[in-house]
Image (cartoon, rainbow, N blue to C red):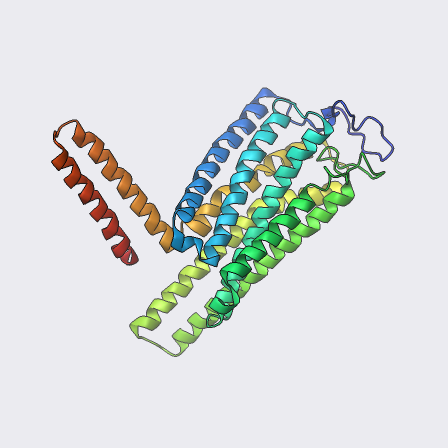
Length: 359
């Protein structure tokens, strides 16, 4: 294992023809390479499928596209979809095939990874603020959170995260400035890495604060309902809703903390102490937890939505009808039977949409 030369005056750390990445290659055995490649491929494929499904359901519905909350979910799905594509490819290409390319190519791919994960956290924060306002000021929610304001917030978030993520490509790296290089990321200076860590910690802290406030609000409302001994059906339904909300948000916070804490702790550790080969290997495997977060987000934020669940059920029933139609064409001749069957399928879809609220 070659030791990384991270001194600010090192001439070997970067080159116009290629990048010296030997000190960053921490997967030595074929078993480790196969294992990490399998993890990235499986989780990446699931993440792509889930987020593509969420995006298709939202974008094909004119009603959902107009709602600010679903604009935030669409942004989250887009960021997680990009993360699954860029991270899986870049991670396998670098750690398994030991390919980095030129300085510009490597920083472009690394910027894409940084952009997708940062935008994912930014979308989570906007989603958290959306729900915070909905719970804290329900009467003024439609006035405060409009579609135009949601689009403006998303535009600002994506533009700012893009600029921040591609600063190393624009020259803010340890090749252009006399700064100490990171032991975890080639060409990235410790100052830039520490600034990005601060940004991520702020985003996660704001998300946690928003959801903790919502949890507190739900707990206080539930306690009030029980204290007043409200037995009305509407009151009991609200209590059950508050309990379900608390469980969902607790799960959201747990997943967020579990997926991001190991990576952030190891990044901070690398800024203070020199890392050995084992610690770098642990970081490589822990970084895949960020991909797990992108894989779980569609389930926590999108598929738990009643409207999206109903659209998914409609889609599955429609596909089942199409399958039955395909099978029936082999047994039944004549266009009249086929037209009748298609009408039955359409009726089933409509019935599903109407009865969805009972699910």
